[in-house]
Image (cartoon, rainbow, N blue to C red; front, side):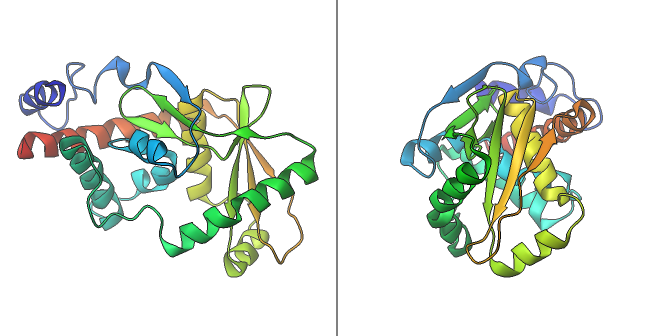
Length: 231
């Protein structure tokens, strides 16, 4: 099939020069945008994420290639593309994430009360065949949205102290802007025990989007090499 065709093309090129014949080098890598109005954490939502790099992993794309974080991400996406399912030991909902998921409606409510902005369901966005993002909310204007983080008390204290957005969050919201085409994303960190910190608006920076695209191209190429080995 397509993956096989792609992987055959992969084996004919060297690692330095990604030709346009491969998915990694293809101009279509960042074309065709879709929005699917699914509920986050539903079966359909999990199925849509399969075999894609998503905004939640954006920071890992900038880890050194030799790191476990980078290699694990590449291997998982490769596994999912080859097998059409997640690895058995891959738990999207860790305890910490599950807690965040349970609190998210409260955080969204706090955001809406604080800003007076109505939030539409974030759903899941895809761009091409390799990347996706599920922001926590869309604004009515259609060109912006919200990323909500339910932080534990220690993480929230750290967040409150930082003068600027942590790099991992910055990459995540830019990945969302790449996939959605939005002009800005509001980052809203929240904790039940602390006073509200107003959301931080991150405006789309084309230079950052380009850095992300380059990192994604490299990651797609790494996945294609695994597919080549295993299929």
